[in-house]
Length: 78
Image (cartoon, rainbow, N blue to C red; front, side):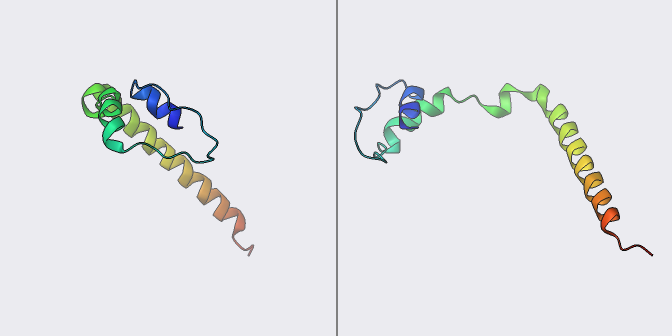
């Protein structure tokens, strides 16, 4: 994970160590370089807004249908 953060920031990887959880560098060193490589999600994909809304609504409807069918199966028989 640490090597990936360094790679995203275009910094050389830290030397390997025997520590199971090596310390991360201060965020001030890596974060600006990583943040510059992350796309701006608001401006990069306006065409995906409606497909994502439709997919979300369809997913909620499918989930509701599954829940209702399970509830109907669990209903006590009269």
